[in-house]
Amino acid sequence: MNGGPSGFHNAPVTKTIVIATALFTIPFGIRGNSSKLGLAYQDIFEKLRIWRLISSIFAFSSTPELIFGLCLLYYFRVFERQIGSNKYAVFVTFSVLVPLLFEILALGYLKDYLDKLTPGPYSLIFASFVPFFFDIPISSRFRIITVHLSNKSLIYLAGLQLLFSSGKQSLVPGLCGVLAGCFYRFNTFGIRRCKFPDALASIFSRMTWPSSSSSTQNSSSDGNVERIPSYSSHQRDVNQQEETVPMLPQPSEASLTTLMSMGFDRNSAMQALLLTRDDLNAATNLLLEAQSH
Image 1 (cartoon, helix red, strand yellow):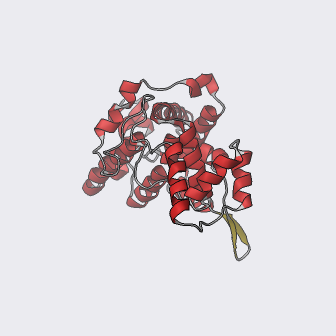
Image 2: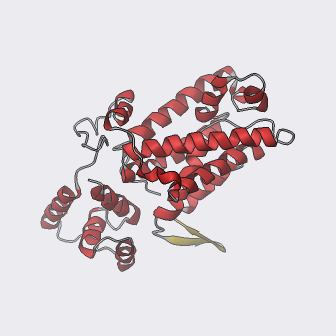
Image 3: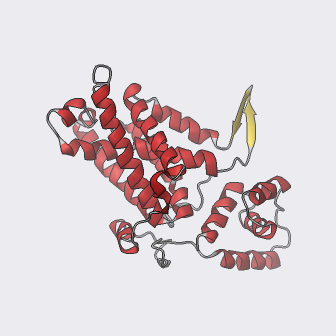
């Protein structure tokens, strides 16, 4: 599946989270202390080890979980591009703190059955599956033997692998994340209207090293850094391509219908599909990003 343009263009918050997750996980894994990172009943209700709260948010307990987790975090950067870094930072904060409260309550009420939770940004990852389910369209379907799949199936399979990687110890954080994602989706407490101040959101771009592909792009006034060129410039690029390359692959009617059902006019949908060579996901991302300018 395509999550939009490669790299962390216009996604500094995601980039910071990915780097922090890797930096927290690798040192503990090398020392063989990864099994001690999870949030446990004793850490919260008896010994009050606050540092366990931080490690439980960022550090995975195993290499396979780290690989699957980072791949999913990297893919879900598309949501930061859609809503902007200011609002995405609110989504991240909400998707970490609310599930953390639920996890503490679960440890307190289920202490006889659940004494520890697996560490890692499970809550953020599985909260992101809610907008993934509702907002990312299916662009293709296929069948393997008798099983019907779509272009979104690989992401779901990676999520299931991560969700059940440690049994009930990973299932609880994952479900808490889904619950938080639903709260955000349905605008509980008006959370979707909130956004981080521009100055605070720009900190994320300074915390991560610049990439060569984004160094020439400027921050926009709404706090989103590393924005891609505006859609109007893409339209001019398409016109130039039409002059130099007379035969471009024509967008399928099904892709046009899907984009138009999302509220985009036919001409904009046609231009986006021409630019992305009939890649429905990439065209959707392009139109949503242009709409946010």
